[in-house]
Length: 110
Image 1 (spheres, helix red, strand yellow):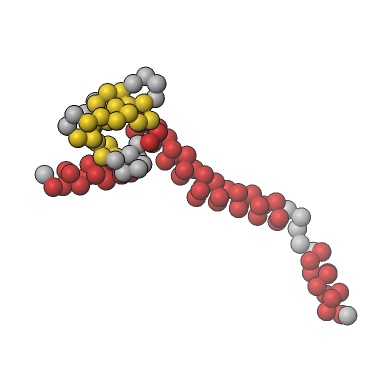
Image 2 (image 1 turned 180 degrees about the horizontal axis):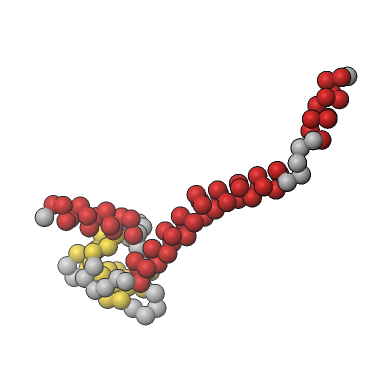
């Protein structure tokens, strides 16, 4: 019985500010390590897609390699997969990471 009363007295003495401060710190850490990096990555991806030009070598999310042949106004582009073979894809289907990786490997081989 005495042990229970000691525990109740110990918890009653804690500050009422510690819980909101800890919750605020957890939200801050979550924002710093998860939300902010994702927002930066999405911004870079959008910038990459908007700066595409004719002749750029790209890779789609599905793994299709090709050169940009024509940029359309309706958020699509024409991709030349082999000489004389063209496909129409959405700009959102372009993978920034795979494209950068393929272009870096091609530069190293030169």
